[in-house]
View 1 (tube, rainbow over the protein chains, first blue to last red):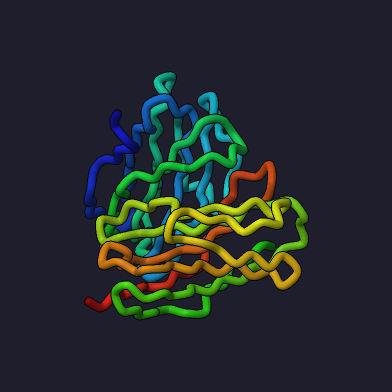
View 2 (view 1 turned 90 degrees about the vertical axis):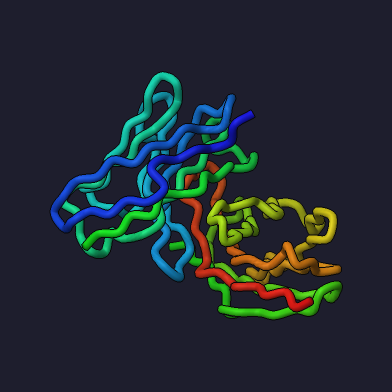
Length: 114
Length: 114
C-alpha cells in the first residue's frame, strides 16, 4: 500500500518562473492538502482540495494555485516565483473533509528559487 | 487568530530517560483538535498523538503521552523511555473543528544521547 508520494524531490527555479509540484495521495484517500514549510519553521497551510475543488485556502496569494484530478492526485502551481517561495512543500492526504483521522504526509518537494 | 507556540527550540534527553516538550496555543474556540507530529531527517511528518479538546482524558500512545490543560491552553508531550529513533523535530499543531487550516508551531529539535 503506497503512501503519499510527491515529485520531484528537489527543484531549482529562477525568480519569475513558474513551477508545478505533484502529489499522489495514499490509496483510498480523497482529500489533499498542501503546506509550505520554510527553513526552521513549521508548515503553513496553503489550501485543500476535495472533490476536485479548492475547499479552503490559507493566507497565500493567488500566485499559488492548485488542481485535483479525478484519481485524487493533485498539483500545486506557483507563478512568478519569488526568492521567499524557497521552502519545503508538503502534501498531505486524508479521507473526507474535516476528518480528525490522521493526515498522511509525503516526503515533500524542496524548492529553491535563485 | 489561532497561534501555536513552542518555547523550546532544542531539547536533549539521555536514552531511556523521559523528556517533556512544551506547547501553548491561543484560541477562542471551544471545539478543536491538537496534534504532535514528528519530522525526522527524512522530512516526512508522522503523527505521534492527537487530542480532542472535548475529551478531558489525556491521550496516550505507547511511550508518548500528553498533558492537556484546556484552561491554560497548554498541550505538552511526554516521551518516556526515550530511544535513539525518537530524535527528530517535533511540531505541535492545532486545528479547529470543521476547519482544514492546521496551525503548526515552530518546532522543537529533540536530540537523544546514547
